[in-house]
Length: 286
Ligand SMILES: NC(=O)c1ccc[n+]([C@@H]2O[C@H](COP(=O)([O-])OP(=O)(O)OC[C@H]3O[C@@H](n4cnc5c(N)ncnc54)[C@H](OP(=O)(O)O)[C@@H]3O)[C@@H](O)[C@H]2O)c1
Image 1: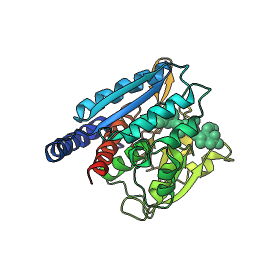
Image 2: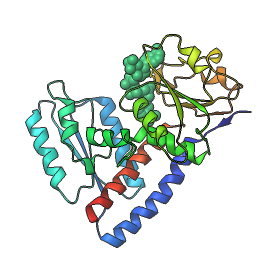
Image 3: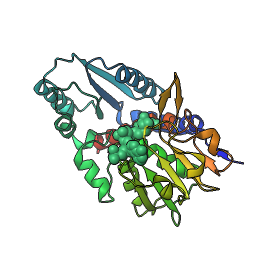
Image 4: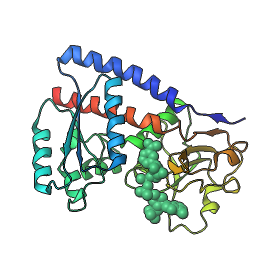
């Protein structure tokens, strides 16, 4: 029978120990780790996400500050705000919510966040460090997958891991995390994307399959082998319901372990953002 991973339970456990560490930090340094979230415009998904971040901060005893800017904000104004937040010793971590209004150069903004406060790990310096196997921060979603795999004792070493998706937010950093020379990494990897010919040829070979595509149930029963471990990062809304990239009900009796959608990777992601914020706070006091 498949083991179904309970992401909500894992998130709660991580948060409990994190909250205790944050409270110790506050006692020791008399500073509350704080996350500054910058949002420009009124994108509904972004506004919702920012509310979720505020709740996660509250649950972890981390400070939260929201900077809401109108969509007409200029790039220079946004850069000025980020510069002030970079210099503000009371701000531990900064995230700039995307998408930004079209007239703003997203890359330039992401590069302007001080790498030591870049808790989303979007700054190329932090991505470069990760690529070299010396990460300062891990991007939150692949970090959540890595943490989940550690906690569930899913060992990739010696197995064939197939990642479907190569975005800068999920697939690509996921591959870099699993390539590290450390426990729960040392993966042998195949990375697939939209230009892969015959996707199922590769997915059928996977001992561990990580799906980060953003296409509802693109991974079907005949595309996976018996006993596979499936981590489904996809979150797709279909007729008002959230579904993953994997046809969950179809594959269930074939897999050994699977993460459901919702309730798998998703709940852990924001807790990893909190973990990164505490780490960033530590840099300001050392
Ligand atoms: N649970 C969470 O916390 C969390 C966080 C972030 C994202 N997500 C979800 O994860 C999914 C992926 O997000 P993302 O930001 O990485 O998306 P993305 O930027 O759109 O990237 C999707 C990736 O899938 C590849 N792809 C698209 N169609 C494909 C196909 N038919 N066959 C094989 N590969 C294909 C793309 O290939 P190309 O590179 O060739 O275009 C791309 O690399 C989405 O459902 C998103 O909502 C979940």
